[in-house]
Length: 393
Image (cartoon, rainbow, N blue to C red):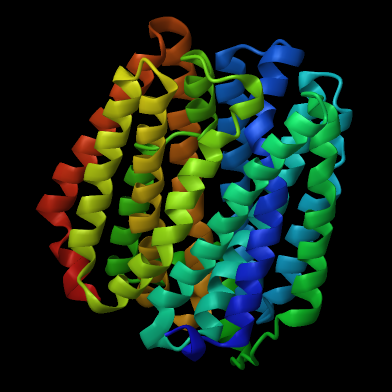
């Protein structure tokens, strides 16, 4: 299966790997920087994380539509990755929450610009019968970077005597290497389309022409996001039960080790199996993850919940991308991914703000019990209605 995927799919995966080494190094230490150094409250973290991710989702709508209109996706991907790389030096220099917010805001705009065009580019490059494997491979390599980043953070914290700002500087080089790799190694296929279709693609009202099967996938993605808040709360949960600051990045290492190991096999399975079983199992695993994190009283138990969280991501994220690509016409694929990420991002804002509020007012356990409740409701809804997804595949 590996050798059948085009080289540009592998290159996009390596780009994601490098950028995630950079981003996850920052993200694994950022909650600690905000709370221990800059004095942020849990509610502030929820607002910053939710708003930043929401901005990324909103930006994806416009970048996706533009990639459809211009029939060129790589330029927007380079722009997004480049903008994210430029923000990396800001984090170690930040002297207030305002600087962190500005950097996170700009970094997530970069993510938003690149997200939908990149996801649509994967579908453009990969053969239709291998789309699940292609998305799974990209997610897997992305997650390899996502646990290498925190691993580098741990090594930096040990070698640099827990100097947070010095360790954050290590994120700069891999970010710029990702941009270079994208420029030289990813070849965008020619995509010819008549002028009228391209002009319509720039108008977001054309989203109305997307089929009902696509909108059902959008609904699923929104419900999934409402049940899953920012991973920053996983880090804070581990710190709360006694994990030392220098070992806090282990949370992201464990989550992404599971994610990277299983995302590609899950992608292959999505090319061969109906969507409903995989999605349902993914939601049940999320319920178990939230319940484990709610009752955890040691960091060992927290790590068990974090591993389940990574398994949930492996089972669902690549599959949802495949369902979007399969259900949307090729000339509107960028717009389709943009709208999908918009709805999911808005739900993530709500979920992260609610998580921060519950943590502040009711404690950590209430935050994860609420996540389990939403995931359980989503599971029941999926079991009742997801037959439409399998019929439209």
